[in-house]
Image 1 (tube, rainbow, N blue to C red):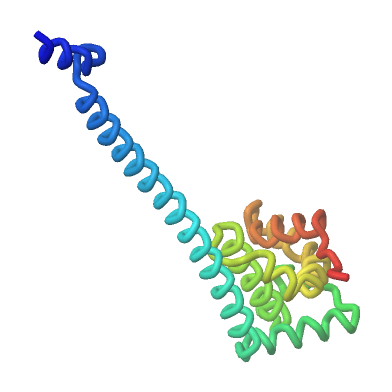
Image 2 (tube, one colour):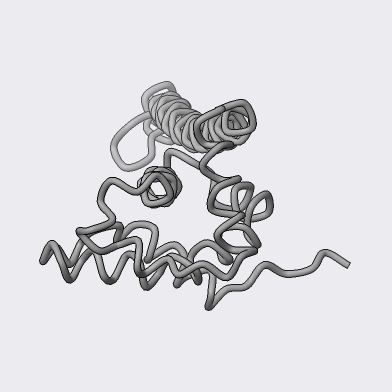
Length: 182
């Protein structure tokens, strides 16, 4: 009888202490596995987000470098710069009578370029902070000069969404001006 009473004393909730130790070890192992899977998921998401940010930054830098060697864009920027410096009227170039004017083509080339970039920024393909730091003054100068041109094109063509991405970007930058680093 002494052996059976010793065996009964080693039980807890109807099971032996060894059973409970084994169960605890299995549960702790499962919890550790779940914690490891969760931690790996968090780290993977962070890594993916970091890689996406780097890809956006690289795409933006590549775009800026490409624009510096795009002869057509450079020619258009020179022509528009000349219109700026001579106090030219951008709005008059939006009329249908001026549809074949070379300067109108230069203006449209620049606006189309900004529209493409603004769309890339809005969709997350390009890094807005880098682009803004690189060309803020130029974009804002061009927006102010070409806004009336764009509005006149919209009115004539009855297309309210014409160059809207450029407008959204410029208006956001008007509200959130580029800050000086010093």
